Length: 238
Image 1 (tube, rainbow, N blue to C red):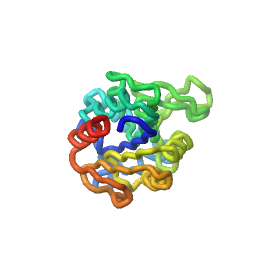
Image 2 (image 1 turned 180 degrees about the vertical axis):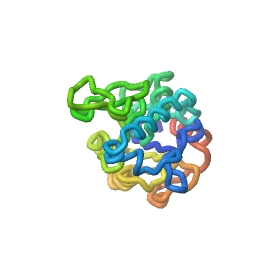
Image 3 (image 1 turned 120 degrees about the vertical axis):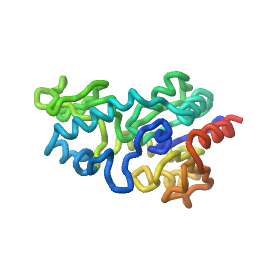
């Protein structure tokens, strides 16, 4: 099978083997900080210096990691897939982007970062988005508005994920839905498999271990992403 409408959702598990820390550890902290202190609009209003410093460090860490075999396998799939292919990632790193830059995708491919991107910032007044490879100051002036400032282009708790209408439309029309490296515990992404089932799509979970929603999938493939994802792509393209 190398055609049809394909939607793939990826989460932290696909980037973990590249050395990108997963979002939340067992102790409820993210890189030593409470989620409430670095990943909410209220945190940014209360302590912009802490929030900007946190994401500045995350941004610098991207220079130390590279796409792994799972990212490259999906790039190969995008280059050879003959139908529509929407890749939705919950990850804010740029590893998918880098992998696809090395192997340009076909015309039916689209990548959506539903939770934003570390290497971008947006204006608090206008919402305009700008590339941002460098550090942001605590109250970084916005080039778009004298009343705004730049903040990380990250979807924080309490904010709506990006491009949900496009994602939902693609899932409603897909033939195959694949979830890779996700916990199945964070909504709305955790509900995508149910939307795909309503669309009568085949559903596949690829993860290190079964997720919270594993029973909702037609098939589960378990093990390290760098092994399971390339094998699955080979099977699809075979």
